[in-house]
Amino acid sequence: MELQKVIDERRSIRKFTEQEVDISTIEEALKDGVKAPSAHNRQPWKFKIVTSEEKNRIADILYDKTKDIKGHTGPHTSGIIKNVPALIVIFIDNDISENRDMDIISIGACIENTILSLVDKGLGTIWIGNTNLISEEIKELFKLPYETVSCLGVGYQDQFPHSRPRKPFEDVML
Ligand SMILES: Cc1cc2nc3c(=O)[nH]c(=O)nc-3n(C[C@H](O)[C@H](O)[C@H](O)COP(=O)(O)O)c2cc1C
Image: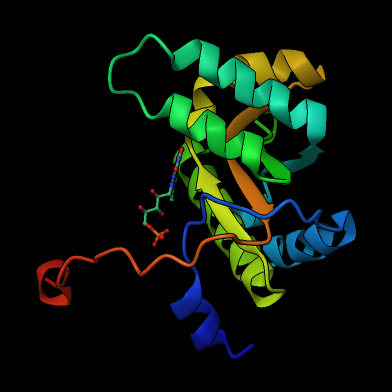
């Protein structure tokens, strides 16, 4: 797909069909993800692709952690994680991180590259930040030493939302 079309057509998708996603397709997109620039070329990211029970366990932990917090979007996000066929958990490797701000920005660039590659492959995505609240629990669940910085839900979209409004361009230009 033409890059401009991919950028224009990307949306946060919160409803997916039951069709499974090939893990190899997600891996191909992550290979595009890691082509992103990173501060001092540290490439401070790590990924784990989870499906079925492992994925649903994350959804349950998020639900339990946020269900009693009035107005919190965690329970809604938990439902999205249950519905999406695959979830990429994205971690920061704090052992090699020398400047947290720079490394988090770098991971953001990597995530956006991955998203655009997935959209180009006909997949829908949802960037999830709420899972940062359960970083410790995810560490424990997978016995991994890394901190969760985001998750990315991936699947075939079952909704085609309009573009969400953007601030007028003049308001963001100084
Ligand atoms: C860092 C980050 C964290 C986000 N976390 C969540 C989340 O936890 N749950 C959710 O439903 N959407 C989440 N989103 C999606 C945003 O709500 C969405 O990008 C925004 O409303 C604009 O809509 P669009 O992506 O369709 O253009 C997140 C997006 C970003 C960049």
